[in-house]
Image (tube, rainbow, N blue to C red; front, top):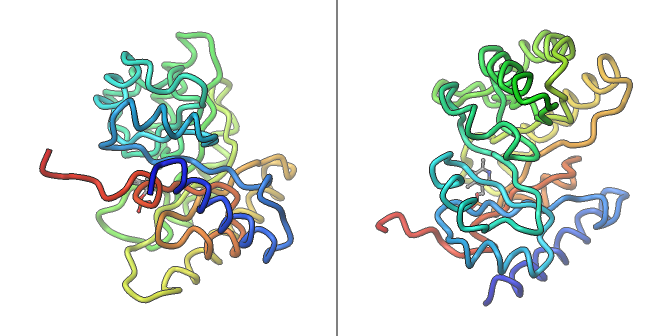
Length: 231
Ligand SMILES: *Cc1c(COP(=O)(O)O)cnc(C)c1O
């Protein structure tokens, strides 16, 4: 199957999942997670109507930007972002999805101020409480959101999560439900219901995530095929 056939098939599944949760396909943003796929693959996904492309690694993103890989679609940063690489991402990515610490918020604010721009971001939540994963703990989220609101060069558009890897089907449903509840809470209590995105769901579980309330899914393998880690 080609990238465009894969995207068309995923769009159909997205439409069904959206309908099952009282929405339509147009309510769901499909982000292509294009890590380890080259500029030609990115262009193919854009030609097939992907809503955005998301990159994980700053070096790879910078190289593909130089190759004009993302022309025609917004670029998102979705990977772990180190503070010393913030300068290479602020103003380049339309949305930084993976902001999971106050130190990173501060660094983005400082960099965006220097560039006289406002950087759109999502707050990343470590919903499974995993030791090795970045993101705010659920109980830290409200304070982080209130703090982010005081920053004038950072605009929070929503929440993002990468739940624990589950081997059982439906295994992530409790995490998706917890995220949805957090989103509704924060949106009401802090953002006057102006948040736009709840980013959760990947190749294996995007339909379940949408049914649980996600409106932004990040899909890699199901679009681009298995990643070749030996290259
Ligand atoms: C790679 C990646 C995805 C997509 O994963 P697939 O299982 O290949 O769909 C989604 N989100 C993030 C943050 C990723 O790094």
